[in-house]
Image (cartoon, rainbow, N blue to C red; front, side):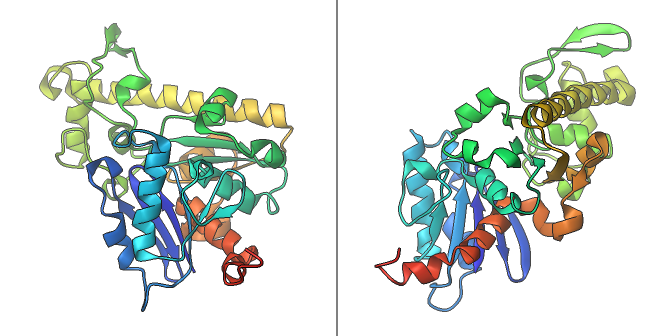
Length: 321
């Protein structure tokens, strides 16, 4: 059994050998099938359980077109694949319920293990805040509804443009507006602050250049229309620190709001940002419970759900599926 999470930027696979994360941006003619074929065996009829969020990529005219593209691409590698939807059911064809259901798979898997918890899953691009004790109310929620409810914040550890959270920075005592060009990303911030390593910088850099601290400092200086020689390392560091302060407060404040409104007694954290936010919130890092699969939680979760629900045995019997 293989679990697959097809995001807009990353393709995550969980199988018997472990976790495999591929940077695979859909807007750049993502080779989903070619990547997945390396995990297929024999006649490609190994069961595969799939979730997605990549249908929102702007290379598609609408979500259903994106869903159909992803389903077809996966099916070329795994013809018998089944796809988990926001109705908490598995499907064998492209339907709108498949749009952005990866977070619900995580919730479905965890709700019996952490029945009274709020899950914070912070990845490269987005942050999911999910009250597991309100699972039935989550069914059918689109990303738009989750944004409105505060269950989705469109900021992440790697791909967020610095200018989306900052309008100005205090640069050595002077209030300085920022450029809205895509000069630096959150990955540059977290690399400069020592919160990720260069190996964690798995997406493209804004300038398609090096993934080093020096290069990240240079990109951060560009945010205030400067060369690094003009504002120095300390100036670029100030940009990083102020972005992180806004991002941290935005996420932590919303988690606390959802904890209060849901009455949850526990906060659990997954994703690339888990170590950082576990410390900030005094939460439980799911890596301690799940190991490396916590960085690819939806792919792991949908795999487990398919096994628990016996989906592929049911599919073999048309009278049951």
